[in-house]
Image (cartoon, rainbow, N blue to C red; front, top):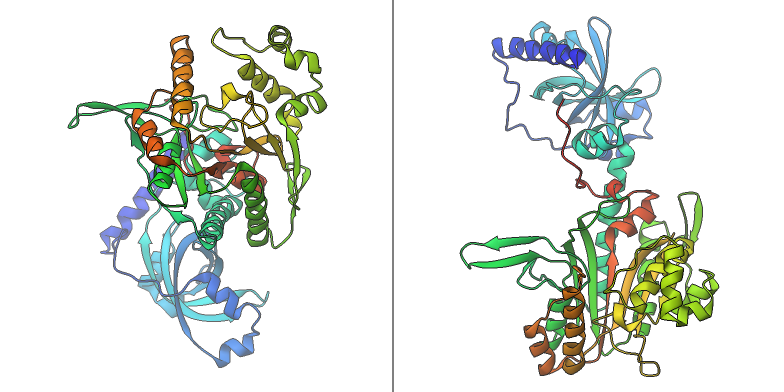
Length: 496
């Protein structure tokens, strides 16, 4: 800490020296018409003779990331959002007064430079500086190149520094943006309408999760940050939009881990006159489109040392079948609620009094099956009591027409044929209320307006939610969800 204070004091003294001679250290109004990446693309393969024959003047701006000074000349590397370029500054080009400013520049300063491109003796494309303006004086030093920002929590907390010093981190978030753009392109191409639904809701619904609560003073009412947009999107199907989607931010007052952040991004889309089986095909097509767009057309990628193959069709297994075949749970335990409880306890799982047979089976699934689902896999026919918004299966009313999709041991998507019978939906909500009264804080509440919407008529439909953050984790080979969220939630910073 003492060394840091010394460096910061030295930089502050430099800043004051610059200001004393009348040079502002935070000026404004200096446009930067050229991007470094464009220069590298246009002239990266040009020989020095070609550059001399076409003496264009370019103006770039960026942060100084390296300085090498040789008395009357100085080399620097300047980096903008997408590229890095060497610049060369000579005293006899700038004059004594301007070159004295160059001697007071530090790594981390942001400058605007104008000049002509040439190649050095080492054949590096370089800008010969004819004019230099200091745009921002850096007062806090960047981490050293080889000994810098290694503490992962500091990197998450100070993402602005992480982005400065780690090109791979910037590339992760460029990929994230491309993924979201590709999803929009695919869905709008299929006739889906992008919509927005409330983020503050009077009744939290659409998922089983504990919400964040707030209070609206003017309306005099409690509101909840949404845990899912589902019930509002299905209201739009009632209203006559047959295909809708939302790229939405959700909030769940739950634990934080490498797989969970209290604030996360979901894609939810709903298609009328469809079933969950139709959405399995849509999901395979969507991921094939993402692979072509993001992964250079290949259906294979590596995630945390494992090869993942997205080539359709993907494996499909019923929920009970997966417990037996993958989880190694004997069929007689799956079918017997009492033996299921005993088995859950042998796995170290808590058994709550409000949990039904299906809830226990899903907890067993989470530890015995989910971690082993490495290749893209659809698990179908979930128990009724863990699917309060899903349509019952016509042949077996104890399960629903639903699937979850898993990749690399992670749940990526959840979809089902929608329950559109308002009578059945009321009974399901009532069962959820009873579970809540028994202690289940994540159970649904009654939503009378949603039931009223169903009474007007929801067409046969299917809907799906896909975790955007987890998709980005897979496509960027990131082990933690915090790696793909620019500003993840962390515990309060310790005071030193």
